[in-house]
Image (cartoon, rainbow, N blue to C red; front, top):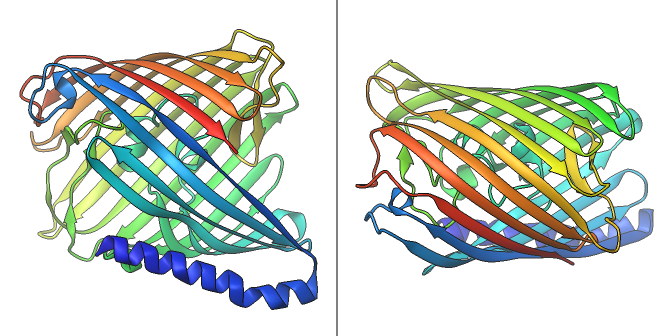
Length: 374
């Protein structure tokens, strides 16, 4: 059923682009920019990441094969549509990504209509090609909203951004309706240094739907071994704080998120999480910053760029002695060759307590990703 909705949105997006094409051609020259990336690799993990408690699991993964088409016409209009294919073991999925039309006005004003990421979370809004680990932190995957259908307005300037939107996931078979907003400011901002602060909030009407947080613990092919209690819920509120400092080769990022859920019987349940991440280039490279987001290194030299990364993340999915608490320490190394090729190697050490699915809560994980952009 969900796949039918995704394909319906893909067809609707293509039809929208086709129907608007004559108008666009009459108004301004149309610029088409096709692209995408392929990210694949290997996950190896111990019993902690397996519901069956398998002592050692090695799995090849297709993290994402993404194809996208960006369109621009004139100085004020743009559109994007993309889709992806993912595979982990014997499980695979086809997914519609972004499918939107955007108006770009004066002084950085933007209005976006369609399907796109809700404005919440520094790491969530950063493209997979620009993050520095194999997977986003479990804090982001547990709490930060992803893509939904909606309308958003905002203003993106060099030193600050704000975005406000209304969203729904009803076309995908869910009952969620949401209001989400984000504000960022960069009081220090030049070619080599950036100080970033951000705040985001989302109010979500769940309309009595079943609620539960599930997470794979930062390993793409693992089972959903970290879970909160499960119950029917009326609505939920999520808040997030962001802070980042970049100076030359060093970038340090931290986010904290908290969620309150009102159960159908009126009870309030609370969950939270935070992470701290640092990256350091051994080569003379640095991360770029634009419009409240960090990008990868710009055109590394002929020998490429090497980055070391470390992260500590923790989530508390437990309330009333139900659910899990977990922490994961990660160390890794990245290699960038030009703007097209990346290697990412991560070593993860988890620690968990409370209610978990894995019968044996021990074991670490190793992930390798090879990424090619086109």
